[in-house]
Image (cartoon, rainbow, N blue to C red; front, side):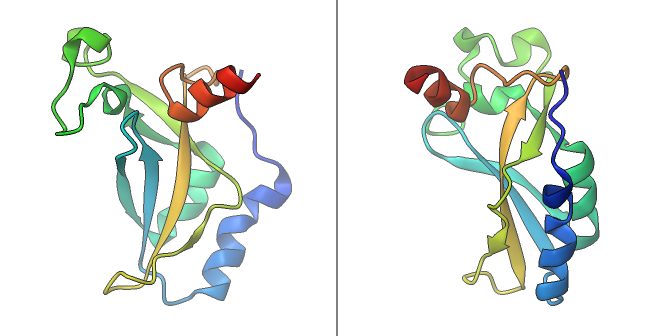
Length: 132
């Protein structure tokens, strides 16, 4: 199962970059179970590809404690090879980070299995299961 974005969502990065030509970087952000924001910084020209294909991040980011140490008993760390999962943008969350010295934007992400199903340890998926 893949997670296709609608056509209007695929236009989001190009419209945003047209409105904000000064943007140099985009921070791709995902919260761990402790509410600590983790992610990856990309250059602006990589943003459309993230909307088209997603970006790989290690599932072990959900195995970190509040200090950033891996909790191996979660089963998500090095014991299983620290495998990547694919993260997709959450439409409508692309915005500027006005506190940065260099013009930078941010984009919230959500993690999925490589086949497209939501990743069980993503806090957004946990919440979705609770309220369902």
